[in-house]
Image (cartoon, rainbow, N blue to C red; front, side, top):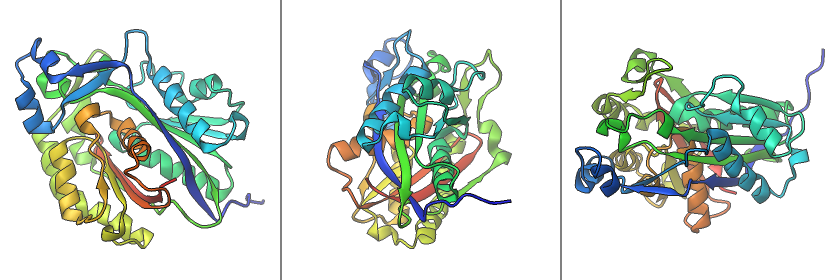
Length: 318
């Protein structure tokens, strides 16, 4: 028996993102439920979010973001041999999203599968892609986080309707002579699985917001710090900190406890809402576009959410 020879390391070649055109402000939501712009901003920090059009599917979102990441990588569809899509809002469990995304992007016969680790899903997918490149299971991997929460949210429930949104973010991972994606630190807290749920196929998303807030602001910063330690990076050396865009107060609390003094902090939630698996790649892609995350710099990615699951790693920014 022989095993394939992989690359010495893996790196992110490019990011890409896509947001639907339909902007929904807090004032728009206040017309249909008991809420206000001040109430939403003070609790979660969101000013507006994007929602897909009626005919726009989670596959459509993923294709748009994946296509942009592929174009930015300098590779062609023929160079991709693995596609991984992270999502918890697929309209149908079968078929998976990834094979359909690959087909529409012209990627011929790749390995293709979906991951559902909710808001930590992109970091899980990134770890899987990095491992596949380093072990020789794949050469170049397209990973996408895509969510269409507008299908799964009760638009009369202000506890969820004001938070969740639609969008997609993607990255291309390829080989490197040196490691440019650090070791993943991941785990789960299944004893708290019932605090964020979609009970069955006829149900809407429900969450115990205060429970999630307490968990995120008390239990997660040591895990994020461990991701830095395993990569041999002091948090003070980071150029960017890109946590899951769950709540602006959670983001600021994590940044404060990690003491990421010189890092640009992703606060994409203000304009994008919570897009779960899409939030990290979308936020970093937008930061790169604006020149806030320098090429060659170091970024800590850290996802957490339903499951409860969490994962994070340090990467070199493409």
